[in-house]
Length: 403
Image (cartoon, rainbow, N blue to C red; front, side, top):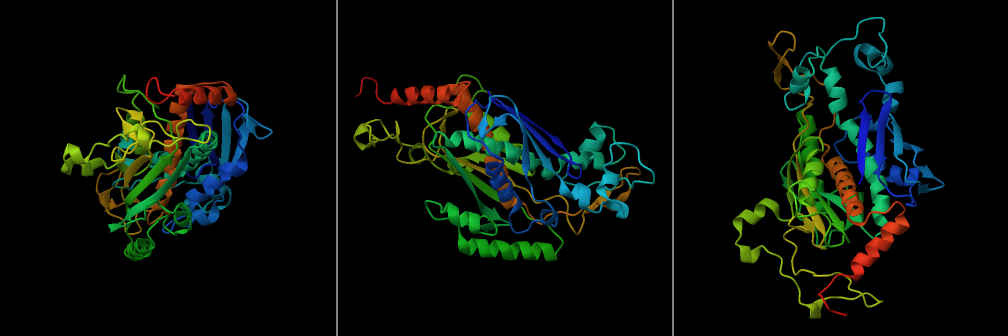
């Protein structure tokens, strides 16, 4: 079983991630984690914060000489803006976010932002300053999640599992990516889109929204390949991998909808056009050693790699709808926290869109959830034990009684 926690605020000293459950012997380095953190910072439409930060996760524990030890993996990501940036009232963030009482006034945030955690947060936690809510609810926290996902990526890569993401829609501009998706082209795109024509239109839409002081949402897709059949379970509602994946991806900031495979489009089709027909054994492929390359392969993948809450062995496909960012340069009308009277929503430096970034964060959450399911199925305190269990399981797949 794997689990993780994060801590830290957007403009505090840094972010902390604690990942527990990875077996000993899995390769992991700060450089591998940095690669995913750098991807998170990219994307057209990001704000000035990304010009300040160079996210780097310093491994504090759980890794020695390039391999996990089985102990909890602690990671620290410094917020450079905390030490170098200018906070409200022209004072540094070290003053605004100080842990101890400070001399001089710190202006509280009273103008609540529609679409953000401000209003329910100040109500639930009985706060007189919305900064006590927005600092933790900021998408900055996702850097810690991406660090966790990078560690899980390194673990799953030992079993050939690969995860990618791309943007399929920004501001109503719909992409028509090639099949298969060119993942190298995605990483080179300013909006992480595989369709170059749509990519150019998305950039124009972002520019127009910025000019109008507005923000944009969109859709991201995560694709994971080389998963074995049978991760997850059909036994209970909370053990279904579909439940766990939709919850983890749905937890990403600004995500308002998650679908698997063809998702909502399946509502318009008859069953004969939906369900993924299983290939007969004559069409199965074998590896060089005679083992099945993939047991029970399908002709299509409308289910997105999941049936009955378990993986089918086909690529896992998850899409998430990302709403426009709540903080806008042209604020919406709102109310004052202290008086309840009409005012403009608070504005703090923000992105026009972070849809490209959401794809990387959704990858991270997917990778963590899959690593948890993988360890649930194959166990092992050392990766050699996990691999032995994994290989024994694969050797037993296929028609009963077949060679």
